[in-house]
Image (cartoon, rainbow, N blue to C red; front, side):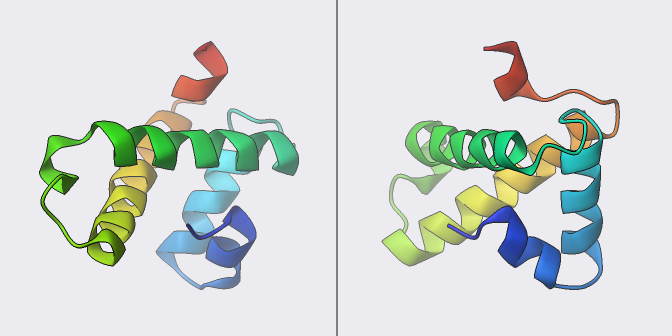
Length: 85
């Protein structure tokens, strides 16, 4: 799984996502945001039915993509599903 630091090092959409995710619902706390990012990817990896029959590497990339979509959508309104747990 890519860390938030890895995603931030990328340009464009990945960096914009990280900045919104860290600074929005997590108030700039990178460690908390990283923990919640990891939880989000892991939750999706273990629960998304569409990943069940995929090769491991492809499933991991897809789980990260789905997690980013979910996390970014919520972060735009300053929310994080893992913060609510």
